[in-house]
Each structure stands twice: as C-alpha cells, then as structure tokens.
Amino acid sequence: MEQALLKKEAIQKLVKFFQDCLEQYFGHILDAFLKIITKSSRLNTTMATNGLTTLHIARLDSSNLVATKVWRLEFI
Image 1 (tube, helix red, strand yellow):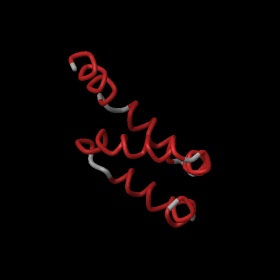
Image 2: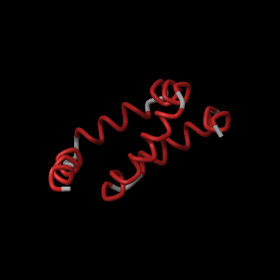
Image 3: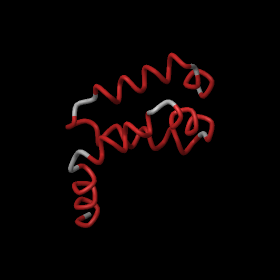
Image 4: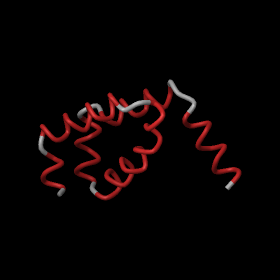
C-alpha cells in the first residue's frame, strides 16, 4: 500500500481530494490523514513536500474546525 501511495499520481489525487473536500466533511477525513502520516515516515515526508500538509494547515487556519474539535474533547 505504501508504494502505491508514494507514486506521484497518487499524491496528486490525494491533494486534489483534500482540496475539493467540503468543509463539513474535512474534519472527518483528517483522522484518516493522521493515520497515514503516522504509519509511514516516507509518506509523511512525501505528502509534506507535495503541499498536502500545508493545505491542511491553511484549511484549519481558515475554519473553526480546531475550536470545534477542542470543544468536543472538553465535553467528552
């Protein structure tokens, strides 16, 4: 699986997928992204150097998703 995800086409598709993801679903797919980057340092590096991590940070910065997640954690 790692080898398939390391291909340039796969990374480009992931970037496009996360770019096009609607705000209401973005928080849900972040958990999957976290699993991917914590399982493989190679995938983590590849995604970071291809703009995916920067894209996530920018989207989090422009949304209230972080505040919502923190609020949920406090009341769980």
